[in-house]
Length: 109
Image 1 (tube, one colour):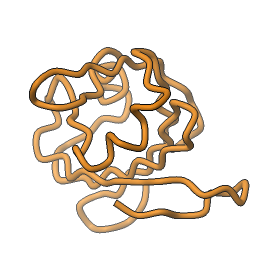
Image 2 (cartoon, rainbow, N blue to C red):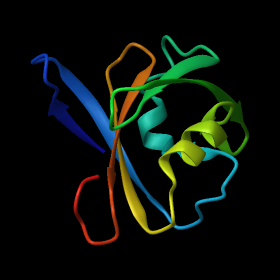
Image 3 (cartoon, helix red, strand yellow):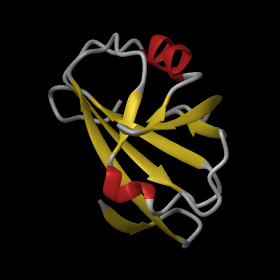
């Protein structure tokens, strides 16, 4: 997890996931990252894809952690993941995750 400056000049936090299985039904948020979103966490959040399109998602918490759940399937299907891609999630602090996708060859889509 790293802190980075977004395009607005604001600090934000990010994490990455390597998507080995493109058919997964939900995506686990790293437990150390959850502390950055629990203060204002609601069940509803947003993913912003590489082309700027927004997807409504639901966050789900259980004993296993916090997960991007509802809406994840629509997002992954529209992104046509094949497996092996690296997803970089930049969290803006306002329940929105901006997602950058890198192919297996290391190039950003």
